[in-house]
Image 1 (cartoon, rainbow, N blue to C red):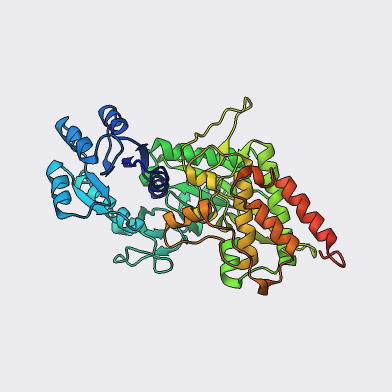
Image 2 (image 1 turned 45 degrees about the vertical axis):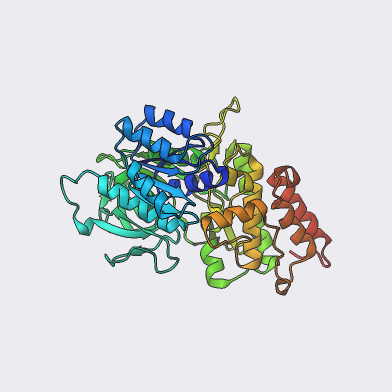
Length: 452
């Protein structure tokens, strides 16, 4: 995993850039001042540095000159609002490898970062068989075979090229026979597989080969298994096994959920009528309450991480299951965090303001994300959806709460519940999901005819 240093004195932009590059599977450190950057560059090796020109102490060019004078050879990408040709010439003369003017689109940043890393990457000893590669979109989990594609046709997200050696019929780790691909992400692929000894269908999540030796990615993968396997609740996916295959690929075995995600449901069917949404909200509250009671904060709640399983219960059309605890925050018995503040995790459309800031979070962050999901269920769209990742995160921090459009006939009490869950100050929200659930029950009880 390439290691990148971000040097940027704007706190919000620094955290946004970190989140965006971590989401692209880079290992990222940050520095807010020139002196801090110099210290990090003296003590650690980076594959690439993004360097702000106008720092508060040293200028970016001064940091760059010191780095090159000390023998630093890693590529440096200057980020600055300076657009004068003379400034660009000064940066290149000081040793910059590329130059990006602010404001910029993240897609352009990603492209420049990949290009710089590609120039300095060591040549492969053995070229990969193109048949063992596939193109995937992390945002919509689609796969593509067109070798000329660089962005997803569905959402314009950059495509990742990953190894794909498990074909239908292949046997993984001596006991799981692959049936088909269920989905893929930036770090892993989920397969439908048959446990040959138990004759049972399971969901097999396998870390991509390119990350099979990366300690941080394996740690996050194992944390997902530990988080989910420590929980036993009907509204949380069950994890049965975690291990490393004989050829060195970490994997996780989960229950196979025959249904579709809440994201897919809303995408295909539109907003959920509010009476039908209440059972969904209540189940999510119960699953989260169980996780929180066991010291697990999800941190990546979004419709794509909620599965809807058809139910035979006449009072509940679907059973809801929380999945993907890869970004979960865990506390040990002493209350010590096993994850650290200053890290930005989650999905920008549903992140709490404190997540956007990279601050330490608690269960109220999940409450905020749940409020965003409730809004999306009732309105059919996320509450905040800016023109870029940075714009969306800024909206979570500063934009007023949107109203659910009146054509969906959502009662005022339910609007109030959603808005309280989405308060920007954690102290103004429901303090846990049990309070939110109780308010849902009270609102239903107040309805004429006691609607269920």
